[in-house]
Length: 182
Image (cartoon, rainbow, N blue to C red; front, side):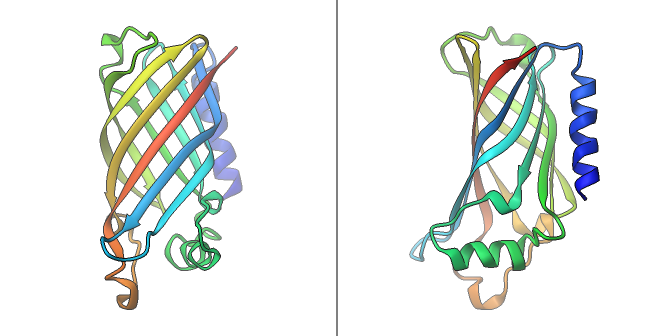
């Protein structure tokens, strides 16, 4: 699996070799799988890796599953061992593009964009379409987005005993700040 991850990163870097690209290895990915009236089931990952090509709006991200932090250690353990099986599927990936990127004039105010691509979790890929916001400030580009995924679309099974506590539709928030790479 480590080889596949390295090949993916190498392929993305090679494909973007002659493009003007921006990169982050400290992107923030959060999710919320809470149901109302139950304890929060939320986690945050502050080490998501992503590349953005500002010539054509192509974007790729690699998220290490075990880097999600929960407020309770037991939640984190169950997430990694029982739900996402991070020992078998250590990463999640996204490959896609900002659809209306050619219409954007990057400046220091957020502009709405449409992000489309393939999200892969636990070996299952599904198309994602999400609204996002992008801006450029000095030599940094900030991209924010929120969307939801259904656990069943990624073959994530929730035991009946906790089914009432975990929402089938999980909300995901991204906040990536990219630096220019030469």
